[in-house]
Length: 219
Image (cartoon, rainbow, N blue to C red; front, side):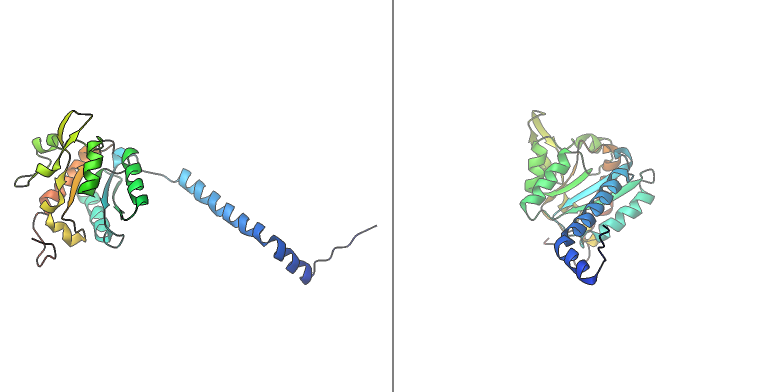
């Protein structure tokens, strides 16, 4: 006996009524699979050819001009680098703080610019490099800058280490939308590109000393 099951409008409607979720699941799985494949196969520049500036406490819009600046400096200051990037963190909730800690201990990022409390916590844990050697060799020009707040007692080192330079010393960063009167520059010790990171930080210190005219920052 031949059983005929013709496809009718009613059958299609009934099928969709009970099985719509299967198609939604199929689409979700397909998108997730594509995203995973893209993540795994996407080329990522090695750490020694990448400099990342992580700035905490700014929005995506505030970081736009800094992103453009990094693209320019990639060509002019660090042409041998494959990527020079600016990354922003809002630091407005517990998740942001967890993300920051995860990044730091995973060796993500090179230059960190964070509010004092975040800076001190990470510095005390030994996450940051000693900046004194880069000052001694002339890479970082800190003449006239009060560095007292940048010294932190690092347990692993058993001494006070210069881990940060105050952002307030470079008020010219305001022209790039980066307002911060209570933050510090640091170099992540596990970033994988300390010398070039110090070079970029040196450029910032040299070229952003002059305040912006009619600045809204408190004197």
